[in-house]
Image 1 (cartoon, rainbow, N blue to C red):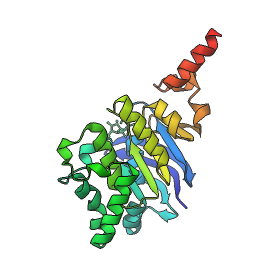
Image 2 (cartoon, rainbow, N blue to C red):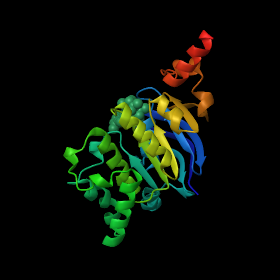
Image 3 (cartoon, rainbow, N blue to C red):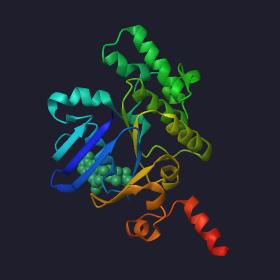
Length: 248
Ligand SMILES: Nc1ncnc2c1ncn2[C@@H]1O[C@H](COP(=O)(O)OP(=O)(O)OP(=O)(O)O)[C@@H](O)[C@H]1O
């Protein structure tokens, strides 16, 4: 089963502390939102979970494995990180080649690479784009292609950094539908609290490198004072509902 166990985790970029005493556990097919104002450490936390930033203090276990050098390859295979900026994820000539890159890199035979690549493209409904050159994709298509590049290794834990940024309403709705369909544990760092409301059963609020609140999304995202105290606002959907109730 998918598990993440984080205990007393702290991290600094050089001498600038970014995360302080972060503790949380997650298991199974949970979808968790990580919210917080700019610069509170959301992306840094995701990068530590996937092993991009190994120099932290505290303890991190992924699927029961201590996140240390000897387990790093296995942890990378169990997790998939979708960068905020699709340009950081897509570097091959066309969509198929990008999605096939990771399974090829793991040494799977070409037939298995094709099976995994086609399955990943199917999961985000972009099989028709497989021959398309990356520079010809729209922003929304690039985001889906980026997600497909991590799905081709069948990760058990998918981490997405601001997935809805720069998407128009139609592409955003499409992304939300696809996120709901994806199997496994998903962790979504985002300022888009309406998307978090729609996709995440649990939400973690961060401020200044610490976890301030961790609980049921529908409860946490209706706490206007708490959100505002940490630089956020109610999701538009919730604000709309509250104002309708006030008018009644
Ligand atoms: N590579 C880096 N080197 C030095 N400092 C960094 C680096 N990356 C991020 N930081 C700093 O670490 C802090 C946390 O950044 P991080 O990107 O994790 O926050 P975030 O909550 O994801 O922000 P945002 O919502 O703006 O994406 C910020 O002060 C940022 O300036």
